[in-house]
Amino acid sequence: MKIKVKFFASMRQLFQTREREVDLPEGACFRHLLDLLCDSAERREGLFDKETKLNPNLVFLRNGQPIQSFGGLEARLEEGDVVAIFPLLGGG
Image (cartoon, one colour):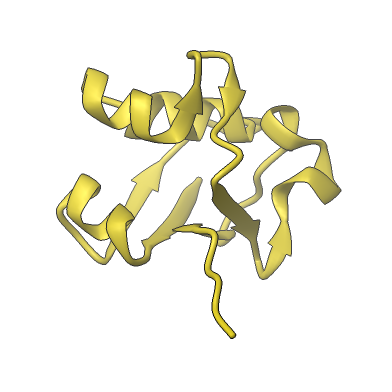
């Protein structure tokens, strides 16, 4: 199945692209997607906090909704899903 991943702000520099389409097997979960994306130690350190938990300073969305709403790392992905990854934004 094909999943589109969009990178924003500092994530664009880390992954050296604005977006990427990836192929995953049917039934793959969010953890599988991140394992595929983290093809270097630098990228793994950017997305994970101590290798096992998602970096709390990042926002992960699936089709516009927080990935935690679907089960976090174990959230099942579906054909055509769009995943967005970006740092927390602040302002005032």
